[in-house]
Image 1 (tube, each protein chain N blue to C red):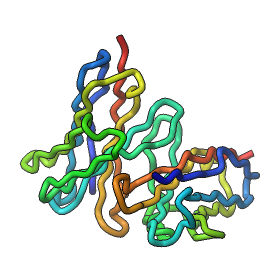
Image 2: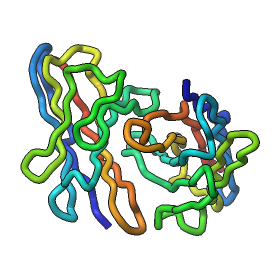
Image 3: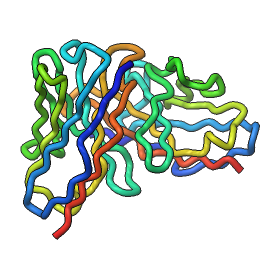
Length: 111
Length: 119
């Protein structure tokens, strides 16, 4: 069964840009994995940001964008704000007995 | 608007079972699916299973196969997740999440239900 990996932590300066990645032990991540990205703050439920690799929900701030980068899914935050400090999880879709697998999460600090 | 409201926190003893409910409103319950996810303290999100709101078909993560049962009551627009043979490692926040197509996939989540397993 695939393991989905993310950077454990990243730090970005206010107004800066940071890219989070999401890799799969089963090989390259493609659009066929329908990558999702969620933001989670302490004590809150995950909040969806990106679906199907690049698409934003109506509530997703414009400074967030999704893409594929070097065989991984990527979430780029451009112009980081203090309120963006949170944990970010990716989610990939697979065929088989475990069709949905979350990454380990990336803790983003805005400092 | 779509709302998912989960049942309250539970404290259970090892070996017991827990049943968490997820009452929905604002959409056609039978037209979409419901996912269940859990998160142990300080840990990653973990997919448990899902149910098709229309035909009731289910699929479970192999990790929980045999211990988890997801059901639904269409008349009450409510989904349920029951986990049996609880152990301390099952202490976690359990979430339901609405799963539709496109922008509706994983778009709406319940507030979470804390299940504590302790003797």
